Length: 150
Length: 150
Figure 1 (tube, rainbow over the protein chains, first blue to last red):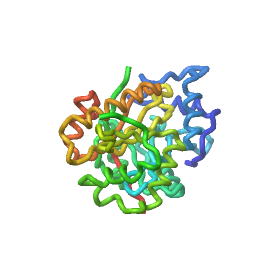
Figure 2: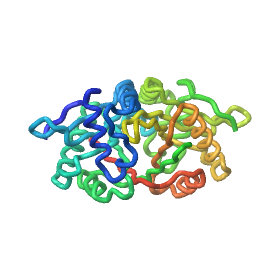
Figure 3: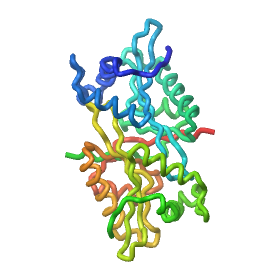
Figure 4: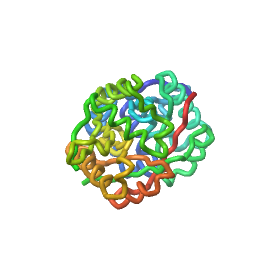
């Protein structure tokens, strides 16, 4: 597995992965052409300096992705942190350690960018993912809360 | 209580609040002059369009604060979300509903900015805060995980 930064041309493959999931299946719209909202969101991520990292197999097929945001903050003496979101591994390839490799790559990138901490939230139902993150050293120290707006 | 956006000149009062807390006390450095890290972090927040919102009492004394970040993301059809961080109410004024008013103000601001969701994480030890967020409609649907880097 190798890693690279996504460009806008990768959006169809990314949305395919986002939808290939028990939660994402009902939340995404993987159509051809893609709904324009995905392109707008990708441009927004670029604007704040966030990265979409892709994992590819040896035939350059995209088999994993995540978003890595570097966030400033006043707390903890102005510590800069990295936030990982929208992690996916192709459903047929799960359980082979590819997710761990992808997250390790993101952690290394966060260090390169001067972050002192990496944070993420994971849906309560993703028990396998929680174990994976704990094996990588993450601590489940927080409750992740969401409020959906009309 | 009234609300306004913070400027860099408000940093000493903000850091005083951040440090006025059972977790923040050991993580912050409230000195005169302030460590330069806080000014750098404030500039970083401005650069990504984040806001630091202050709550003031009738004599214009700062009694509460939070950070509101508007984050783009590919997931959920490119839904833009707001993230609330570093929430504090002056310790002598807690338990009077001021925290709820401050969070309600931030939720209204997130709606104005076109966000479809507001998210936050809260340390497992902040049980009172969890109840406050649940009363405002937040659901504890996620686990919040952190990895500290050397």
